[in-house]
Length: 455
Image 1 (cartoon, rainbow, N blue to C red):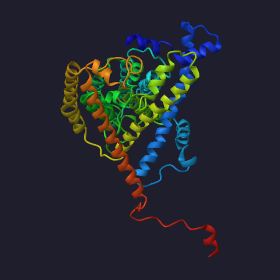
Image 2: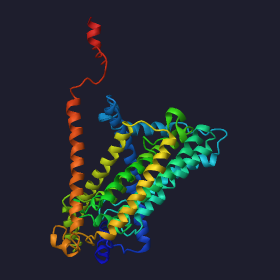
Image 3: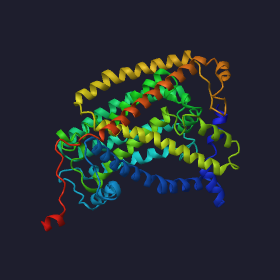
Image 4: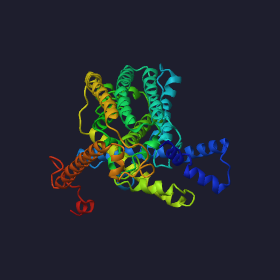
């Protein structure tokens, strides 16, 4: 298993292709320069683009849910509204309260934004579209850097010298630190089923088909998927767990005193973190860049036997895998937006009660159940299509994993059924909702100025 895995990730496809084309020896200096250029050219614009698109997307989704158009003036369907807002924030005056701690006040937005940018470096968009595929602690890396964001929020509230900002910062400290515990336990449940913290390997071992996705490995990972999603909402300050901002009672929470470009950093960090959390959930539970039929995994394993001869085909396959990965992550992001504009905000005591007395015991029970399952129910080790044929019943029979395969197939059928049910429900609501009156009192149409002048 480990030999085949190392053989697949120890040869970065894109990096090797670039070095070969430019005739560069892959030294430490060359790899460092390559990494800096890649971060500046790809990841820096990507973080900004993701945040801008998500801000526009959420405003359009909120408008749809609330029976209003949303942004529709700047650009086609309001697509450039976020760019216009960004220009406005850049041109606005950067205010600092007189009694604020000026150093910490300036530092806080960067402490909130930089960890999100750094976390992008470990995301496995495709088997060969990963900044560092040999990062053996990729999951731990993302969790570690994202945990720094809470420091930026606390500093923003404290340095503002505003009681509403301090209240929001303290709520943030309580909420994020509390929910990171069940979040981490849910991740451990998935890691136990995978046996690795390397995000590229996590994707490779899920390439045999939908039944090999980690979310369907056993019932405890299946339930850990839901626990992770709830905990990620709270850890990321997303509604209904947006108590650190809570504009109805705390003005704007921890960033009340911020304006201009510093204010935008907090928003960029939140929406980029939404994407990272969704990508991590996709890599951990939903098969990463793999399709439900194992086609991407099969051809990747076949072409990686001779990557130089199949370089162009592998590049195209990685593009397909990246599109699949992004599609799964965007669905999770949409659900996060959907929940925000559907559920009411609970009180802070209810938020902490849900964590300490509900979600944390539930996550601990899942961890215990997953450990027992791993002990009693064997599974086929290795990378599908490389170490074993995931379509062969005899392979599972030889490893004594028949019961595991049956359970995985049943869970996959349940998961597909739930997804189809939700899609059907939403489609029905979309079709029938078009015939309903959108407002209780629709406004009168705007009269034609020429007709008014003529009359």
